[in-house]
Length: 120
Length: 177
Image (cartoon, rainbow over all chains, first blue to last red; front, side, top):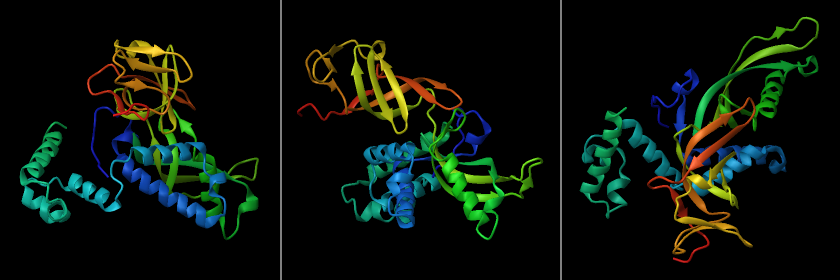
């Protein structure tokens, strides 16, 4: 989860709030739904319409479905690695799984992330 | 956008619930009261993820109720002006179209739809470009920018636009590629 200050969000509660990506929300709501299923036989009776709509929405618009990918994305965002080597050490599957990802692409991605950080 | 924040609330509990499962009953009541509600300040509370702390209960004078200050973490959905987000079209008419992003409804007026898109009425009302390449109808996914949010005490309603760069249809189920 990203913890960033942003002038958009006035109101002290949102300064300390953590932004959530749709895929993270999808994982959270799934786990909640399972908990409800374990507790009673008919969870769809108990969840509110807001919950249902939000769950449908995040499932539809999640770009990353693999929970491991989501975790790796968060790690990259939190740690802000500067070089390709650092990134590959932190997140091994960048190199091993995506052979199509050239080093140039990865370093470009890291540069973009650093730019965002600079313009905070 | 979804956020994970800590909120606080004073929960009133009837004495019949006092006993060994007091805390469980308190958490259950909290979830029933708060989940699914909307406040203008925090947005829609989608789900409570955990209870941080439960303060000491204060007995109310006059009634036997006890009020507990509860701090809890929850996932909320709060739209902001200027935010770009993706939504699903739910209704199209000649004034514009309605779209839904999670629990919140967004209206895009026809003034904020690009000029080359025209309204076509019929069985499936839609907005189409003059060459028919892009179509906005029910269930189309669009990326829009919120230009206004109206926050009541209990409701949030938004106005959006697709008249800027990189906004508009993302994925069109109706059109052939």
